[in-house]
Image (cartoon, rainbow, N blue to C red; front, side, top):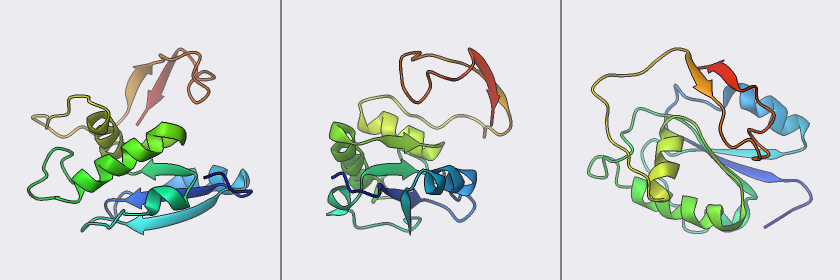
Length: 139
């Protein structure tokens, strides 16, 4: 679906992990944001037909703990639908869900990870990351 005004679906997994500073640039670019709280589950049956892009935010859930968070399985299907022809962005838990949906390996670490780290750019031809410096400190 491509509408005159890009409609972005944002799935918020925890009140402590809002869209934050990403909302401004999306709105400035003319995007319409719909935020859905999915911290306790979500029905995603037709969501992939109503939006032009998907952002999955962070949260306290474990990306591979389907027993405690059974709705994650539905989110994996939603990610696969979007991936076919629309942009998908994942932050923290969202990135883990994307990796899992696309066949990557995700597992709980032995400790929590907070703070800034230095990242090395890859995907120089990617329109999203191509303009970044070769190394960047990021949270």
